[in-house]
Image (cartoon, rainbow, N blue to C red; front, side, top):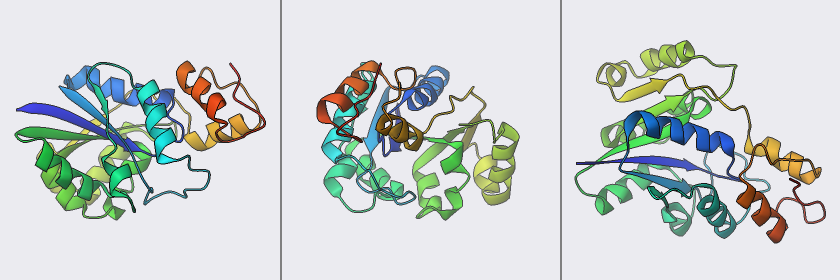
Length: 209
């Protein structure tokens, strides 16, 4: 049975924090493949300043360029709000005899009980969650898991890890880009070049190295 990790998000734009989170779980679990899936419309976030699906797919191709990474347009093609339960159902039709692992940060994990069909998601995959900022600790995640999903925690359907987070958000980066600030330490160089070439987020002040 192959082991596939799923990492979804708006990726508006993709940044080093995304890369660190995925690579940390990859090193620990040795996934056969990692699917990077940009959302069409995020159900949990305000979609203001959302770059086109095409642009976000292209930025993901540039950011996640290792051989075992695959950029999927499954949610872009489906359109509408991008619900993880719907995506997993589609993926299980495509990838037979596969163990799926869903990688999410602490911000998403701590609202998991509000997601659409969380029990269905657990039936189809293992949740891999890690802290993303200094405001939350591994103990916070463990407490949440035991409170809201005690059965899944006991059955090892929740994998919690305490990787050192890189505190950065796409919202913060878009503001920095709009102000013409240097984001080279937070965004892969090829992605910055793409943002400049397409005039994303601010047509007058491009990103700087």
